[in-house]
Length: 385
Image (cartoon, rainbow, N blue to C red):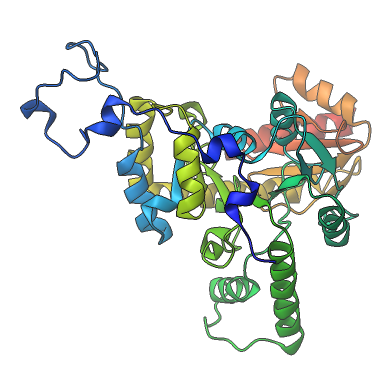
């Protein structure tokens, strides 16, 4: 099936003439502000934050484009990933008419944003072991032309596992290289068959759906799997979400990204508010992106702490299962989960009780080593009592 973008965009958005701001008409950014007399935007002439921010976040996009090896016009910068999620509904889904697919248990904002935008949510639950039910997804897409978006969170929240792999060849090389092997190690026959099967699965998924497939990679930095950003040229209906909130430690800045074809990103820019990311956040994000070594060090520290947490959680008999995680959190099946949650809360240790999504489960964010040890100490008190 050939993907046709115009056919799935809301007609009012396709024909929308965006608001033209003063800063979009005159490109202040890259100019020497001190040599300009700026009387075009009705700004206060005095103050440290008196000028409107760059409406298209050009410096951030240039830095990201260099790091991700893509074009700046393939990047949208938003007020958190939540803005990108909301805009996807506004651009592609007719209220009261269209629908989307989610794969629970998963990130709750897909469903909340759908409700806000009056869009029906069709749920295709994950299979046992928290894997995608590809046959059920394909059947839904075949039988319902109202479906405009498929949401896939990978690594998934709250389960922590990767749901969809962009390229098993890359993963094979990364795993063997980090374990002392060579990047060009030959594939085992069984793995080569698995790699080809994965590629056929991706081609069927993206090729059979004339809608948008969103891969939410909020936790991508904590896995060795290749980002779906590398597959943008292969799949024109792909949108990838990432964020500054996790690996970069900037949840308070509220900045997230969408990566897609230039045509889809143009629709994002057409639909968004003119100044959607404030100047303080833009400067802080650019500085963080440019400090790659600091980010890499902190990511590795979180992964090491995750390994420590998993090892010690597995030592308690009242913790029935610790699920594999490629994120900055760990999900565990716990006997009397709510009682354990309440005990930790009373000790001043705040985790998430996910039992409403997955029976008897608690989710532990990976903190500092001191915080991880505090969790283990408190759990040991439960065991002793």
